[in-house]
Image 1 (cartoon, rainbow, N blue to C red):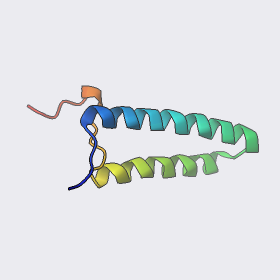
Image 2: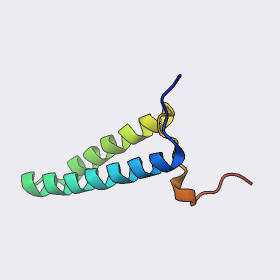
Image 3: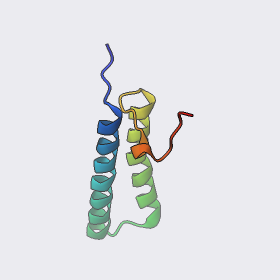
Image 4: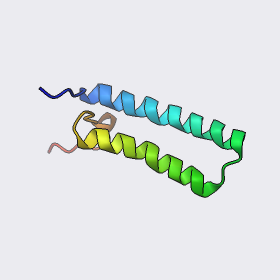
Length: 71
């Protein structure tokens, strides 16, 4: 049995993760005076974690119903 989260839970986990990582990135950038390229690399790796969790189907986002795929 694979462990997976529901759509609403996945949406909230992704939202909270993105907000926390953005706040953390802004804090780290101002603290250490990081340039733009390093900031982009940090952002890429934080999004790569979310992409990996979606790819292995642990997260199943419904994107809060914005993209209705069922017709």
